[in-house]
Image (cartoon, rainbow, N blue to C red):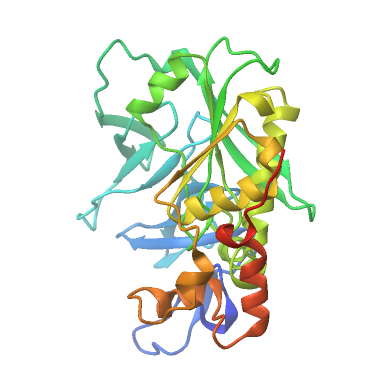
Length: 329
C-alpha cells in the first residue's frame, strides 16, 4: 500500500499479509526529501517511482524469499536532468521494465530496462527533422537561494558555445501552483530560440510539486508570496551566474503562471526586459470573491477563502496583480 496516513505527506510504502490486511509494516518509510509517486508489483521485484532533489526517479526493489527489499536500486541515466517514469508493463513475470524518458535535449524516448544487467534498450524516440543533434546542446541544474534561505532548483538549457558572460538573451519560465511539477521536457519549437543563442530556464519554484508535498504547501494560501519571490531569486541567479543580464531576460508563464507574471512584474520590474503572461489569472482576488463562478469554491483550497477570512483577504490583496499596479521605473 502506498499511503499518506498519519500525516506522511510524501507517502510511505507498507506491506501487509492477506491473512492480516490491517497489519501494515513499513517497507519504504516516509522521508522528508523523497516523494513516493507510485509502485508496481512484479513476480521478482517491486518498482517504485519517486521524486527527489527536483528530479523524478525509478528504483528496483528485488523480492527476496517472498518479501520485497526495503532498499531499491535507482535506474541511472547519464544526463544531469531528465524526466522518467514507468510505461505500460503488463507482464507479471518479466525481467524487463518499460520506461518513458525525456529531457531538455533528449526527445521523448521509450526504453526497455533489463533488470538483471542494468542496461537500457532504446525502442523508440521522437523524430526531429532538420538535422537536430542533441550533442549540439547542453543542459544543467543550477540553484538559486530564496529570501528565506531555501534553495530553488533551476533547469537550464542552451546551445553549446554559449558563454556565461552576461551577453546571451534568455527566457525563464515558471508556474508554481496546484502541486504541478514542471519537469524537464523536450520541445521542438524551443530549438528555434536555442539556435539563435538564447538560454532557456525553468524555475522550479514553491507552489509546484518538484521537491515534494512541502514544496507545494509552502507556496499556497498564506505562503503564496514564496512562489513570486522564488521566481525573482531564480531570475537574479541567472544574471549573477552570467547566463544573461536583466535587460536581456524575458519572463514567461501562463494561467496561474500568468498570475506569477503579473505578481513579479509588480514586485521586481527591474529584473526583466519583458514579461509574457499567457491567459493570465491576474484578477485573482476578484475571482475568488465570486462563488458563482464555476471554479471559485474549489479554488479556496489553493488560495484561501477571502469571503470568510480577513487575513486571507488582506494577504491576497497584497499580491493580486490588478490590485498592485503602480507607476514604476
